Length: 144
Length: 467
Image 1 (spheres, one colour):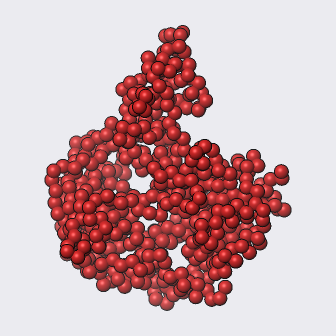
Image 2 (tube, chains in turn orange, cyan; image 1 turned 90 degrees about the horizontal axis):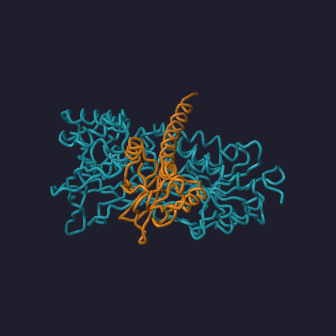
Image 3 (tube, helix red, strand yellow; image 1 turned 30 degrees about the vertical axis):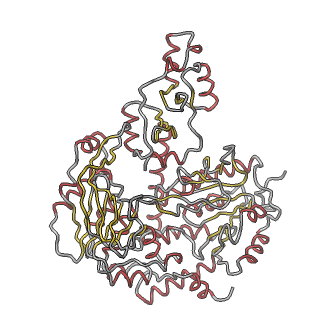
């Protein structure tokens, strides 16, 4: 299974924010969409970073004025991105090992989706459930 | 408003398609003890079960045994099967909205992806799915012709369909006769002159999609020796590192099995099945008559993407493989249904957990749902459709509880039946199908085979007699 198949099961487009917007706006977006990270895009729509709950907490721990800072100030800039043709299993390994919870998916430089570690866990759970279900049905069919 | 779902006013659901996702959706709906649900299942063909009948390989009868579970679903008194009734032609979406509270699309992924290389449409180059549908007796594909006089065949891809096609091409007549392969295909394959079957993977052995049971089966064929080039199953540094790090026992085992094959010396069986890795077709070469005579391949190397997947990168090394028949199996996608929102990028109906979405507003379309491959894309095994359909049914019942269902003018089973009888007097009921099933099995018994399928719609209708 690849990332394109995983994206096919997600209905929404990724939620984005611009670097010059405030952390307050970022928090409002995270809360409204009930998500953990926003992709930061520049004017032409190219991803330039990602801002997660963790980035905001880290800033809040040392700065009472966190809400008035810009997203560009606190975002993670070196973002690992995935391609639609990436394998689910290797992406799962990379996310686990590097402790990444959100990966933007980019196709030809264009943002086409985002996958979270929750999406990856769900896809793997569904895969195993399907296999167990198939085997159970076959075993039961063998019995008189 | 009084919600449907009571004995006086059952919840009426139309399900389009009759493959695993359709039956699992019906099962989840019919087993509710808090609701009275009636499910009417519409199928374009006279026969049910989708890819269980028309896709699963005939030499894998055990996988087809899931049909027994579907028979149990169909035995429910509130289940009806309308076979030989085509959605969009015999009954339209507007008709269904007049007769049902909810509609579920479970039509699968019906078309193959193209390789996108020159020569792809030469004579002798086919989608693997057409060959599969043909040998499984699908009525739409019985006029297909595959030139089995060719001695060398290439199957592009290493997924389960590619494995099935390669294996069927290598089976002996004795092996095939013990299956329910269509009579036409049995005859054609019995006379086949195919001697070499090449399966081509663009990546290495550690990335191949086939499963270990599938690959083991290829090493145990009665009439074909398996051949693997030792240098193509030597793992590159990246694959080795990924394998060690991932601790993926199944993949380690897969590589072990393939290395074992590379050590074998051919035992002189009449056919050879050659597994190739790290090669991509770049062109099909034709003769003056437009017939495939060769395939140009480029050797690949693997490189790691940012997210850690090993992907093929072409080198400057090429080779020419003389083949007269090519089957491509490089992926599948859904086809849009008339009047139903579609997500072209991923080849699925635009949906959220099974609720069909309006592409403009991204809001659910009242009363319309999707399940199975047309909902999630062509992934998973038969059983994957059970939790998939369960998710859709949860969405349907949540919407019902909110009163968000269609308000059909004629929510009676008899009204729907009358409409269908008018539009398609020769519709096939589940009782009719069970008769066809018995006839097929009886024909099989007479021929010493598990089943001899009817492969033409007219043949099926004639066997059933006057409507």
